[in-house]
Amino acid sequence: MAIQTQNILKEKEYIYKRISVDEKERKMRHDVRNNLDIVYGYLKDKKYEKAEDLVKELLGVVEERDALIHTGNVSIDSVIDDKLSLAKEKNIIYEENAKNMYYGDIEINELALLIGLALDNAIEACEKVEENRYIYFEARNKKDYLVIHITNSIIPHTKPRFYKTSKLVDKMNHGFGVEEIKDIVKRYDGDIQYDTKKDKVILKIILKTRN
Image (tube, rainbow, N blue to C red):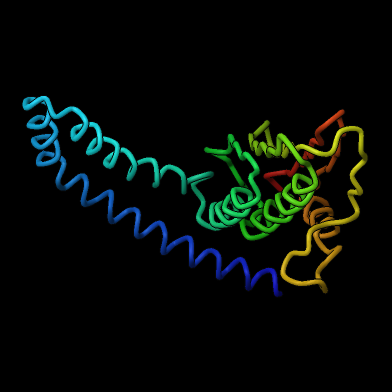
């Protein structure tokens, strides 16, 4: 219940952020002719630095919006955006390939919770690494299944304890995440696997998209 409440709050925060960025983009598009005239004027007067600064500013609005869209679903994107902010605070490089996911019969809030818990675990493992902290999140569809891969760095030659998890909302919830991930996977006739390499661990989650 505490986690669901937290996710709702994060989703609202994400929506407000999206609205703000969308307003900036609408204004930019509305003023596109004027902005192009200004850039052209700078170039004509050989004021290249000013032209470059304005173009960077306009591109920044587009990049800011693109940075907020991960899968295209608000619930999932709000969770990923929250974890991405946390990863940046901890100097963790984050990359993803998750657009155009097909969910089918999977309940979106359960999927968002699963992804959030899995990323929490990945972030916690990365925190213990001194150098080369990274997380790679990938989601793709294969026939009637959604396949999620989360790869993250670990201390070389160590064996992560997968029954543990991050602190989540508070200490009472410590140890809850991995079990909840397993429960969600089970509900969708899926599978969960951990593959530990020399300096990284790969979490593979398979969920059936159709009952």
